[in-house]
Length: 559
Picture 1 (cartoon, rainbow, N blue to C red):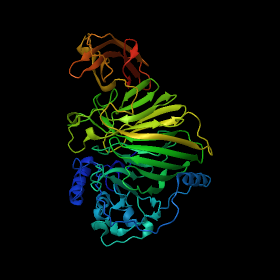
Picture 2: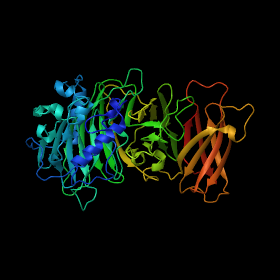
Picture 3: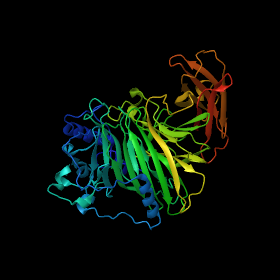
Picture 4: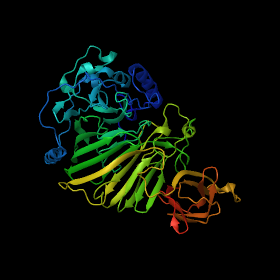
């Protein structure tokens, strides 16, 4: 379940690599290779946030062709490809590149002066193949003037000491690419990277002043099922060069894997928030047990609700919290559900939230204060959430599934959320869908409607402190949930109605009070467990109403 690349050339999640080691490498790169560039916030933990310098003299290799590829033509290509047997990408990577260790691979650097301009405000840098990034992707740049294949050129890179003197042919290709943008229209050449496509169907996007965190994917196939997960690849990209001073860029991508093919169109607009309008046509080669649409992948190590579930081993860490996302939000007409993320179970867990229709879902990072994380380099407080909004006819009936993998290291992306259709995915039965993807920073966010008060913290402790029993019962737990939002009553004496439920045991003796320090409201409730715990999670729910109207999200957590 590891995610895509965190660093210049490799995914630390795929190895036992300390994120702090990556930070040190990132600092060296940012300071050595960014003269004259704007480095917002100095550096990003992931080292993938190299700021690109637009040079008018830079241009990709290859000759122009007269006819740019359209999305409709790509859909037809994907459909034809699905009718053929799957052919795995050839393993044509030279042995010395495949054998590179982590440090030698990280020593491969793109030369900033070779950055490729894409119109006045965008630019591109490719990733070199090697180490774990063995697969080649084809990259084509296209404009109304024609098509230019972006072929491999060894002079674009400093290959480092391990590969000194080596030369590779144009057929080597690239592993992926990153795109930078001039956020300030008055300084179009002062650019910052905001978008990365690297590894399988993974991509990362950030808003202005954010740093990379969680990832999105084109599709997820059989995540968490016994037969094992499949990772289809984006194999070809067509990047439409923005014209004039356009503030958006369009990327077409071809997906291929053993179970399906797909055509994708990404219309990406960087900013605050950054957004992507995504359209896709999927063509299954065979039946798929669980097809995850608009999947998101993130990391949650530990947070405010402790190490995770009952019996979980605590983390010996100087930081109060470590995560790229702290909760899942699922929005349906008139309701919005917040599920705090969990780590520490003995085995992976799938939670399913049936929705009909789905208005949106996302993995969010709601805790935005530095003092909550105390990590100067990781900057967890500046990592984006991602919000998915179905368009057109939506995704149909189905469920948002949350997959949580036990993890003891922050180098592993252990959280996956995706929409799984209820209708069976049969061979030869195509799917067409469109959705929006938006980065989310400080809330409230325009994408999340209706304007219900948000769950901003979930804290758990012993209920014995209030009314101790003799002998004390370690099973009695007090849940404290904080809500904030403009829809909450200002009057501390307002009559608040509390709705509680538990799938086993009981939530009892609720008490709600205004928090004058924040202007929010706090709910206290004691959980009394069942005499016999069920095999799976015990699900707890709560929400607040006032004057006959629901005023908060539905808090949904596990005991």
